[in-house]
Image (tube, rainbow, N blue to C red):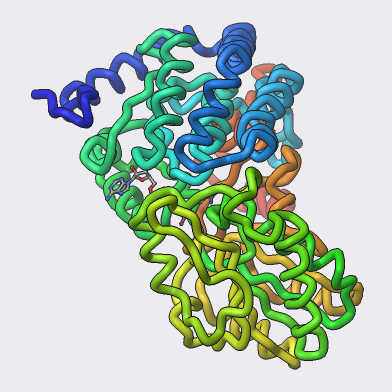
Length: 469
Ligand code: NAD
C-alpha cells in the first residue's frame, strides 16, 4: 500500500524493509567498502552540490529566509569543508589501527578494524536542513555505509533539492531520500536499520530511541536543550556583546547551539544589555525586518510558540513581529527569573532572556540542577572562573569567550550529553560514529603458551598471578 504525502508517494513499511534489505546486501557484497569507491562518492556529491549551489541557496531562502552569506557559511560551505576534510583523511581513517597488546597476550598483535554498520537512517531537523543531513551523510559514506535520508518536512524546498541531488548522484539502492512527515518517519524508525542518526528535539529523540530499542538498533541522538551563556564581570563587554548577539540571532535564533539565555554578573548586566542592543542595530539596522541578513521563523506554529514566551514588561529590545511574514524581531528580556515561562524549555528563536547573578556558585548549582545542556558559553578574562565552570558543569561542548563556533571544527567531537543527546560526530568522529570498531587479536602460531588450558595447578596459578595484577 502506498500513501499520499503532498503529491509525493510515501512508502509503507514493507517497501521500506525492502530498501533496507537491499542496502544491507549491498554493504555485505563489499561494493561500498573500498576507499576508492567512498572517495568517488564524496567527490560526486560535492560536484552535484556545486552544480546546484544556487538552487540550494534559493531553497534555504524560501524556507528560512537565509541570506546568501549565512546559507554559504553555515550550510553549503560547511558541507564542502566536511567533504574535503573526509577526502583528505579517509585513507588514514579506514586503515586497520594497530594498538598495543598486553604482556598476557605474548606472541599476539592487536588491531581495530573500522567496518560499516550497513544500512543507516539519517533524520534531519528544519533549522539547518541542508547541512544537518549532508554532514552525517558524509560520515555514513566515508565509513562505507548505505543510507536512507529523511529531511525535515518543514523545509520542503530544501527537502526537494536534497532529494534531487542524491537521486542525481547515487543509485537508489545505495543512498535514497524519503521525504515526508511523521507518518513516514514513524515507519522508518521501526525498521531494523543498522544505525539511526537523528537530529531534532528531545521529545522526538525519545520516540526514536524507543522505536529503535524494539529492534536493538544503535542510535546517535543530536538533540537540544537550554544552553546557558555566562558573562562574568571580568569580561571584554564589547566583544562579548557582539559574539553573543551573533550566536543568538544567527538563523533567527533557530540554532541548536545558540546561547539560550544569558546569566550576567550584576556589575555588568545593564552595560551588557546596552551593548547587545547596540549590536543588534549594528548588525540588522534600525528595523531588522528590512535587513537582508535577518531570516524568518520557519512557520506560524513556531511563531505562535515564541510569541507565547514573551512577557512584555520584561522586553527591553524587540518584542514585535509580523505573523504573516513570519518575522520575529531580535528580542531581549531583562529581569528574567529562573521560574519564568521563557526559562522552561529551549527557546529556539530570537528571544534572549537575561538573568542576573552575583555568586558564581549559585549559577553553577542552578545549571547543574537542570538537564545537561548541549552547549555552554562563558565570557571571562579570569582563569579561575574559567576553570571552575569548565570543571564543575557538564555540557555537550562550548566556547570560552565566543558562541557557536566550537561546532565548526572537524577536530572537536560535536554532540550532547544527558538529555541533549548521545554520540558525536564531525571529522574523524563522524567516521568513527558510522563505523563499528571491530577488535581483532592476531595470535602467533609459532609459540604456544598452554598456561590457560586445564588441567590447572599451583605453578600455572602462580604464573597467571604474575601476569594479571
Ligand atoms: P523535530 O524533533 O520536531 O523534528 C526532527 C525530525 O523528526 C523531522 O525530520 C521530523 O519529520 C521527525 N519527526 C517529528 N515528529 C516525529 C514523530 N512523532 N515521530 C517520528 N519522527 C518525527 O525537530 P525540529 O523542530 O525539526 O528541530 C528543532 C530541534 O532540533 C531543537 O530541539 C534543536 O535543538 C534540535 N537540533 C539539534 C541539533 C544538534 O545537532 N544537536 C541540531 C539542530 C537542531
